[in-house]
Length: 343
Image 1: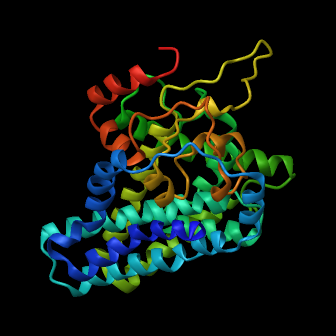
Image 2 (image 1 turned 180 degrees about the vertical axis):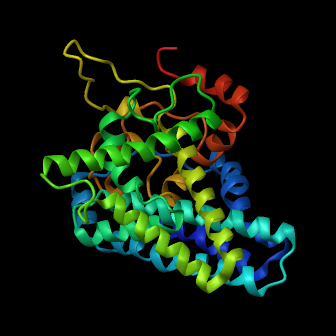
């Protein structure tokens, strides 16, 4: 049964299915589940710092079920997205229902889409990387595949990383800086890669160009099938998914900085450069994203193998509650500045 615990991650898309079918007040099901029920339950549920033995890890490496749990997010994601777009054109939705469904489906884009795409994007297999790009598409954020893997993981916890928030930066300023900085960084990283390989920037070898073509084609298809209302809906849920990602980025590295060495280079990324949260419920639903320290320490390590590190700083709250707290900067600063190491 331990192998099946990650099935709980499907609770997010399933609440969106409930929202889409029941509508009314149920339209807010995913929002309420993710940002009311989970934050209330987490302090009362188990919190574990235990790590797997080497034998248990070896068994998990062999078990394909962990991969299939990720793959199934593709039909869940696109099923939710296209059902939502269909309803925009066929159902007589109230403004409240429209708001609730857009928020619920946007959360699915951020979790089933970006979060799972993030996990698969770290794999070496071309098939896994293709799946990652497919999952990132509804968020219109495919450049994340480049910037996160080749930029964020290299520059995390330094001023060179747009996705690492320094102490004292409010969330809303971070959103703007990270959104713009990550996009520019992705173009620069792709240009560097092409130069090293001796390939022209304006060519079919440039992945950033392909990402824009694919995303534009997706939006054209949405417009052709679901009209202008569907187009606005697709952009809306994509934007919510992006803000969800960037809020998580803000929480994961807030105020943590790597030391610059005498050589001018930064120290190697260590577990204490990312915030962890060991609440079992959040760990399972987010495919161990909350064990973020080990992910940055060993970026290619699969989610089911991630370890707890005693030296990693722990968030005072779980991820969903921390994201809500970050939206109120004075309260966020009051809580987090007490928790920051060496402050």
